[in-house]
Length: 441
Image (cartoon, rainbow, N blue to C red):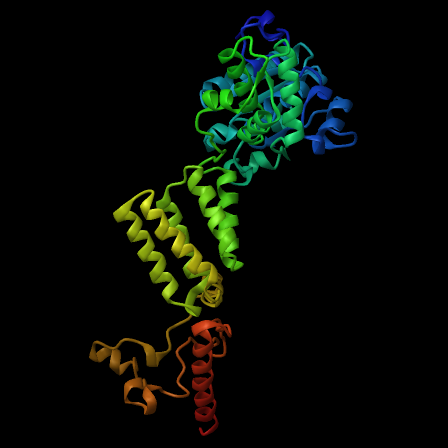
């Protein structure tokens, strides 16, 4: 158990002069926070919690560098609660147990506790479950911070006890305000010309910490410089990187944009989102797998060549690698975008799977059963089966192949586009033959 003076340590330590610029600029009041006005403006959720002094458990979900840790600290201070910070990257069950013991000691002393877990999505199920009884009993307020979608990364039991607040990347005006604060703290230098300032904001890509690190590096690399332009900026930044959280929510949002651009038959948007994904470091093999999925889901039998072309593009990439093989992926993506679209098989397959999942095990009709032995034949297995190749036109008109009670069901309905238009015509012809056969019985 930590000593009492540790438990009641200062909640807002002043950053030492040698601390990183981002730490020295960390807000000490809610009004100093840049961005997140949808949560912090008058009447908005976190402002209400701040002013009321009543702090519910919550998950703060947003991209890196948007103030999740800062907000958690400020909310704890507003309620007079002791702040215990854990990093899910480094902490384990023992650290959770220690935090619980601290909270129990503080409760006996009449003080509330906030337990903040950074990168909460990195805790496994059992570690997340360790918080549940204490959140339920009100021993402490739980605040988790994550860059990943809580719906997938946080246990449903914990999620049901904590509201989710979505934080947004900072916009250009907000990043510009941070530059001004940083330059003022550094004594008025470095001053950026308009082009360099715009480039720094673009490079930050909504991440305040990233922006401040660039300003700090510029100041250190150019001491005494009056005005810095793009030449000095290029020497400090090197190759500009985009934010691409491989496997995170931004990643899946961009994948979604690519898929929807293909589905919407927009080849230009398709190329743009594919380039964005590859630029952010996505494995091109993953892009190839997604293209194969799109060919099956959104084009289907309207153009069966699309699936083959997507598979060929994946093979070309395996042979050539980057960057040459990426052109084959781009060609396949454009083909998928302009191809006729059909999700008829996708929908039919989903509906049939759902029926099979919730339906009983219907017996196979006798005429469709296998009859490899005399006993099975004597039991009537296969009796009355009509061999389609021996029928007129190779089609046994009026025959049924579904279990009893499902004979009238239809799941696959071709769309009037591409090859499926012809498939639909053929099915209509066969159904006419079925109707005639049934009418003649």
